[in-house]
Length: 364
Image 1 (cartoon, rainbow, N blue to C red):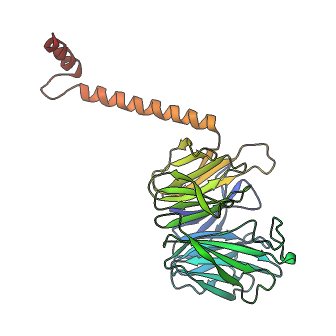
Image 2 (spheres, rainbow, N blue to C red):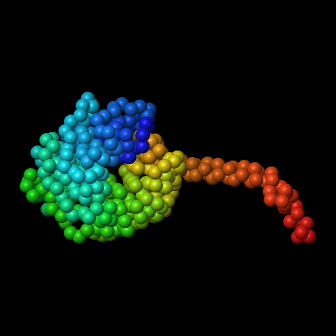
Image 3 (cartoon, one colour):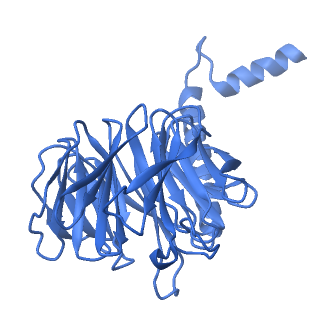
């Protein structure tokens, strides 16, 4: 790609496509199998940090360093509404369809969350509770039900629960009223969650259990258990800043990535690392797991990074083990070459073989 890639999301209409956000201010839709850039979305002149797509109409949204949110019609690439209201970088986005309304929700370095009418650009509510910048947002897929049933249903009086994470190391929960979303839209739910020691970069709900996974600058990713009141029950020591976390469709694997440049795969049940993918030469900024909608092929990991590359990795333990063995052989070969190179001339004018021979004579 022409510039650093700062964010990635799957295309909800096709499992073989993604959208990426670039530091050059461009967003692109990319075909994974060919690498072909089918759509390029232009307009911003500052880095794009985050992306979201509408679930109701073909619109792409991008948060920018210019403190605004840009939008485009996806088929035509025509610019749409530009959302203005934050006083610092926009860091995260998501969309939420409600009865008679679609919300666009944005988090910013100005420590606020803004709820927008996605169709009109109207600012509906500003949420202020974080002490520092808001870095990640996620919607609880189970919501909050008044009748105990699973799922979100406005007719039964349920609520949507928004989770937000910040540089202040807290995760906050907000109840969004489904009965009358135009009035008293969101309220804060106590208490704050503080599983990490410092900034939390990513929030991700697992597809089956709906547990919450987090990624943090403290070098760990965690699973927060819904059953145990969002207490951590798994901690993955990835190392260095962890920028992204993803979970496989069957919840067998957890994938993490960040400043360490590698992509690590973990067994969700045991917390043991089962594989590592190497290839990026700078910080990894985003991860998604793409699934074949027909179910005929295995899931794949997509990683993007500061090195301006998009990389595809199989989510397959046998292939991960094969890659590990190949890397070990490569490293052993490099070590052998280094020994051979340094053995040609060593301190005192003796080769490595001569040094060994001398040592045997001295032992005698």
